[in-house]
Image 1 (cartoon, rainbow over the protein chains, first blue to last red):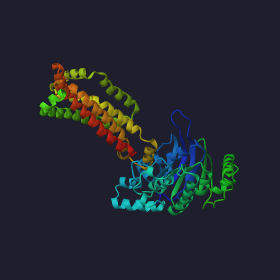
Image 2: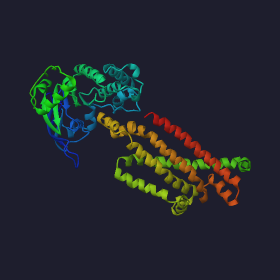
Image 3: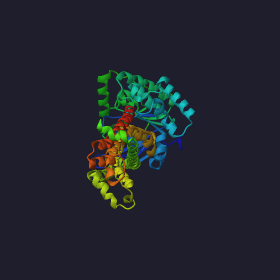
Image 4: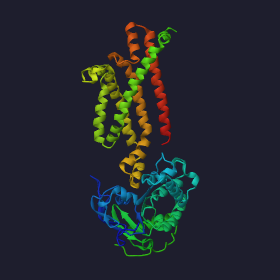
Length: 266
Length: 211
């Protein structure tokens, strides 16, 4: 599961843009390196280009200019299906298959990869334990679950093939604040155990500081800055400051998270 | 009770014609499904093509059914045998609701669910088989249900070109001004339509409640 070259970043944007036909660019010459093992948070308001940036990584969208490299290989040379199966994908609330039980939702990719049934069952059971889902929920349908349980299923499904990279688009966005805080801190523990490269989209600064080892602040398709959580709390960038202010008004003092293992980003 | 007289006196004839009727409508709907489902999936992916194809199939419904049966005399091979003509005409009628609902059903699947599937790494075929088609099935069955009722109703007119079916009794009754004869054709045809409608309606409800 190691990257072809250990020095190559897991994902690298090289001046990548995405401009839909007849519209303004949603992502504008973005250069960004995401190193193996980090959790990069894409932070920004609605319309800042966070989700577009994420979808460029698994080729749900193709850049209209510039280039992306995944594990040192230009993204255009990856088979999109193989690429996506190396990147778990979890999105806000709605993405579960409503006609599949929890078990089949989580086991879908292993089934598509033609794993033997016993191995799939075992994998599903292990994943349900990992994300804190009771085994009795295996035969339930998504509509019979609470919002928090659905999110857990979404995360388990994204982890099914044990992908080295995990893409998450506001995975805790649709939850009530209490459940969200619970899931966030649980996920922070999970993250340490998994040691995966994670890219997480959010507009929630608290989430960014709790889960991110790096925070990429986006605004109208541009990268405003790349910070460690500690740097984000200190930087004088007006947009970052505005974020801090908006959240301190809402949440009171945030405690400083520990600094990331290494500094100095491209 | 004179309306039931003919039915009671000639149960075997009514039964034979009913079976003919079922096979006319059944084969036609079968063909319409075989053509309509793949074609509906194909046009769901191409909106421009969808308009053209649905427009063309829709235009069949503009032709009065009796006239359509008449036109088919001129078609080689098809025109040789009355049941062939009837089946072609009925398939064309049943095609529209099936095609339209397959297309609408596929397009009606929550785009977030489809995108999640694609993002997870399902191929187009896997996405169709495992996600889009099962989720669209309730709507598709609704289209088949309309097609079946339509085919059973219009199949009575197929007797006018000698294709058989319960329409024979109705046309004969009309010519002889014999209500009991008309009734012997109309009652089983109505019951067939009703029964198909109810059973497919039940199936549709079952499929939709899963979603």
